[in-house]
Length: 274
Length: 243
Image (cartoon, rainbow over all chains, first blue to last red; front, side):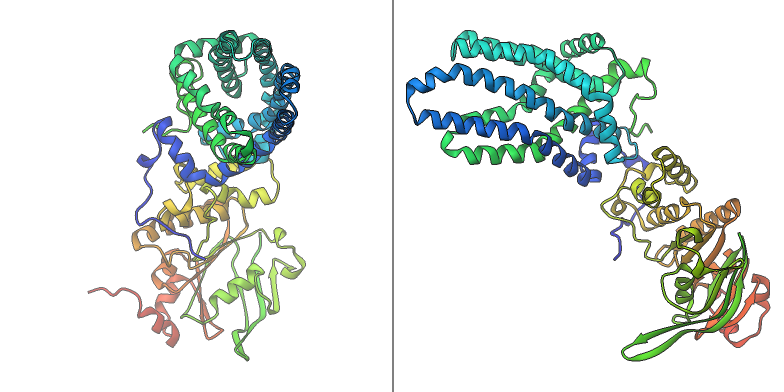
């Protein structure tokens, strides 16, 4: 067996100079790693997907009984569904904490020791991610509660909108800050808010593209299996790529606002500085 | 580290029902912490001999590292590293992962692996290639990575089977110079197989000439150039002549 090779020496100038260049470069050089990360993400989201599938099945079976049965159980269903999603999100956060740490080392040009990096990510970041997630989820559950009391009204949608536009983006920043720096609980909230305001457009876009799976709710119940195949493929292939992309974006923002003056070791780490 | 002694070494192959003698009852010594170069025409048994020392093939006779029979020493304890002419790197791994691979198999701590990989990559001037995959590198760069993968194990004995045969002349010269420096710095015993006489002369402390499975002689480069033996004279014809 012989290796393929290039006819010319690979030059230092060809190394990525910006985080944007680094995104495609990561795929070129590390696609097996990204596939592995995808598998971990899928496994960590599997309990949530199974729960959601069973909930959908239950709701679909209710609809075949009577409209009164649906009306009576709708409020309970929505609240339980909301709580269930929060609980299973805590499980999914195991995979996310680990994978983000692997991606951080990848972006920094470190040697990747997948199992060890996963363990370190979970050990260092999981509980803080979950703690902040629980704070965020209080507002999520409130929004869902309002939706269940005033379903399909402007109040309900406003509550969900507020959650999606303010609390969720701040939480996203908290996760990525937590992945990079040692910070206290309040420092993370403060800095999360700061970066949200600094990059409000991109932050909202980040949330929107991450929440793309929500749009599968528009797939009718008769195609429930299609809905979950789409979700499985999303979490296996699309979501890890999004995590990497957002990781690179947030790292570029940290380089701009924090690292240059305060963390010179982290500044443009992993990039070609020549 | 010690000399490597071959005693009545015989290597046989079965090919299409026929027994072929690759090495025919040779006895000699590779010198400790020196560059020992094996030369000879294609099929003379150089690679077979190297593979026997590496533990890759069966043989008759004895091989000693110091006073210990090689068969009484486990592969890990022989402290050998091997670089072949095909220097196959794992295509799905980065250069970092390729170099780190033998150390990961030994389950060394991560920090130690990282220090050793970066140190050897620095020495071979391939630090900036650590995050690249092999197919994006030139042959010369891949060969440096393969040598790095061998050296990272901190071997006492380095076996190289025509590592520069696929590399252009200029790159070959650079790598040869690097090999000489590194062998000296790290006090490694080098056993280097080559069909190229110029390479042998520039690299060797000792030249071992093989022909049809037998040892013709052992020479220093100066002695090799003065030797009038028929086989040696025939090999010397490949040397560039002064106009």
